[in-house]
Amino acid sequence: MELGSVLQFLDNKSILVTGGTGFLAKIFVEKILRVQPNVKKLYLLVRAADHKSAIHRLHNEIIGKDLFRNLKEKYGKNFTSFISEKISVIPGDISRRDLGVEDSVLIQHILKDVDVLLNLAATTNFDERYDVALGLNTMGVKYVVDFAKQCVKLQVLVHVSTAYVSGERSGLILENGYRMGETLNGETGLDINMERKVVDDKLNDLRSQGASDKDITLAMKDLGIKRARLYGWPNTYVFTKAMGEMVVGELKGIVPALIIRPTIITSTYKEPFPGWAEGIRTIDSLAVGYAKGKLTFFLGNLDSVVDVIPADMVVNAMIAAMMAHASHRPLESIYQVGSSVQNPIKYSHLQDYGFRYFSNKPWINKDGKPVIVGKVTVLNSMDSFHRYMAFRYLFLLKGLELTNAAFCHFFQGVYSNLNRKINFVMRLVDIYRPYLFFNAVFDDLNTEKLRMAARTSLVEKDMLYFDPKCIDWEDYFMNIHIPGIVKYIFK
Image (tube, rainbow, N blue to C red; front, top):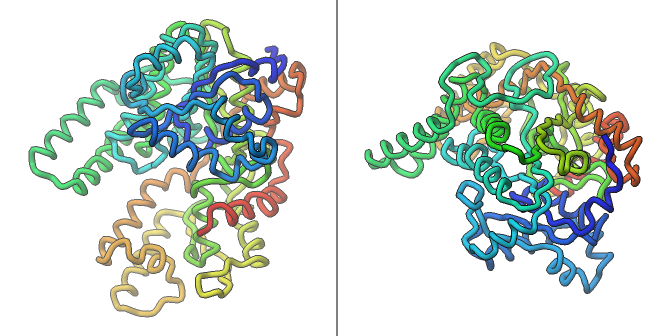
C-alpha cells in the first residue's frame, strides 16, 4: 500500500462533504484548508431551506467556531475571500434523491467536478425517531451511493459509520462487513425496503388516529428500539448505521468505497490545537454531570475497556484511507479507528482522572461557589441498579431529604410527575446498558496497515498521525481533554 504525498493528493481536488456542520466535518475541513490551500473546492452539504440559510450556517456553525482561529490568524483580512473561494456551501438533505439539491445546474456541475465524496451526515442519537434515523442513516446512504455512481471522475467514496454496529458482541470485533439482510441474532426477514414500509404504515396509522406530534415522536422512538432489538441490535442508532453499511456493500457497484468505523470520539489531540471539542459526547456527559455535582453514582463495570480516540486522529485516518484507495476499482475496505487493542484504557482510569481534576479545579456554579466532588458510587450490575432505584423511589415518595440527590437535580423540570421521572431514567439506562457493560475490543488490523503505509511511504510523515500508542492517557485527559470540555462544552 503506497500513500505518497498528502499535499500532492489534495492539490486541485474537489471534495464533497455531507453533514457539513458536524463535529468531524468541521475538523476535516479545517485540516484540508490548513495543510493544502491549493485544494480546488470543498462542497459542504448542509441541511437548510435555501442558499441564504446555508450561508448563515456556514458562518455561524462552521467557520465561526474557535476551531478556525489559526486559519483566521494566517489569512487575516483575506480570510473571508479565501473561504469564499475554497468552500461552496450547498443546501440539501441526504434523505432525498440527488441529496435534496434543488438546483439541477449545480447538481450537474458537482457530478462533473467531484473527486472525493465523504459521507458524514447522520443522526447519532441512540433514541432517535425511527423514521428520522432510517431516513438519514440508511436511506440517506442509498442516495449518497446513487449520487457517487453518477460522479464522472470520482476516485473514492468514504462512508463514516461507527464501530458499535457490532451490537453487544464480546471479545475481539473484527473489521468485517455486513451482507444485506444479515442480523446479529440470526433472525431472518430483515429488508430495508420493508423497514421503510413499517415506518410509513405506522405513521399513517398514528395520523389516522389523530395522534399528537408528541405521541407520534414517542411512538416512533419506541418503534425504532423494537425493530433494532428484533434483529439483535441494542438501539436505533447502531441498527440504522449497520443497515447503512449494508447499502454501501450492496449498491456501490464499481465505485471504490471504504467504510470508517470510529469508536468514541473525543477532543482533538494536537491539531489544529489540543482539546477542541463540540457537543456533549458519550463520556463527556459523565464528566459534565460529575463536575456539576449531579452525577454521584455510575452504572457499569469499571474494569471494562472504554475505547476512545481523539477526533483529529479519526480525520487523519480518513485522509490516509482515501489516499490509499483512490481509483482502485473495485474495492471495499473497513477501517476501525480506535484504541482498545493498541492502547487500552479502563473506566476506572476515567473515574480517577475526573476525581483528581475536579478536586483540584472545581467547577464554579452559578452562585459563584466551587462544587465539591467526591467518590462516585459504583453499581456493577443491573440488579444493584434496580435495588438502588427502588430505594431512591421510596425515599422520594416520602419526601425525605437525600444526601445523594443526583436524579432529583438532574431531571428537575423535565417531568413534573415523579413516576414519569423514574420511567425516563429507566429508559435511558435501558438504552445505554449495552455500553455500560461493554466487554469487547475492536480489531484494527486494516487501520494498522494504513499506519505502516504512512510510516514507510508517506512523504509528509508527521501530517497524518493516527497511532493511539503515542497517547499518554493520563496526560491527555488531565491536560488536554478535560480542560477542553470545560472550556468549550461546560455552560
